[in-house]
Image 1 (cartoon, one colour):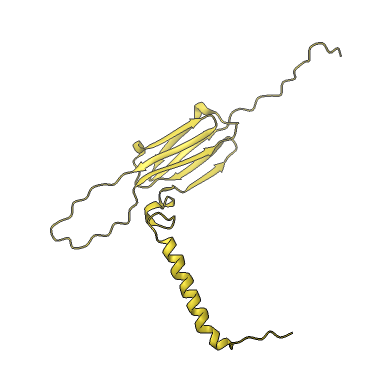
Image 2 (tube, rainbow, N blue to C red):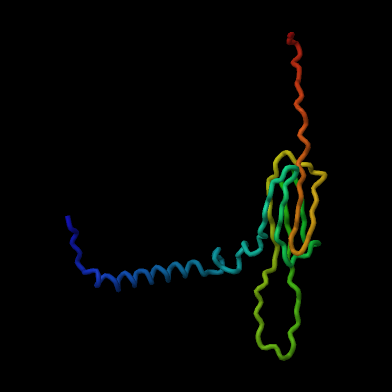
Length: 158
């Protein structure tokens, strides 16, 4: 059965365009508020360092990108089997000369925080961290796996 339309498709086109534009206006209005997640004010992903995690035969290797972050401003903590990496990228003051007419700053500053649950088979006392060329390398050695030990049950004769 064919559906009857009041308007031809060419008459609907301007109405559809108007509807799409109106929807876009409302979408942008609610997305561009200072408190929205789309706002530059609250973009936390800019300060979340990218990282690679690799499992090796005897260890886990964490490679964390921290360019421009002073290693003194990075803290690595282990609480139980949760490793937390936190730090802060500070702003360096620059003085402009008298002839400067324009300045564009695209650097991000602020604190970052990442947390990971490590497997139970780690050697806590042998964890090392090294900073090279804006990369933080954290090596988490695996603990030696002990041999199987049989436990006798008292009162059972064999």
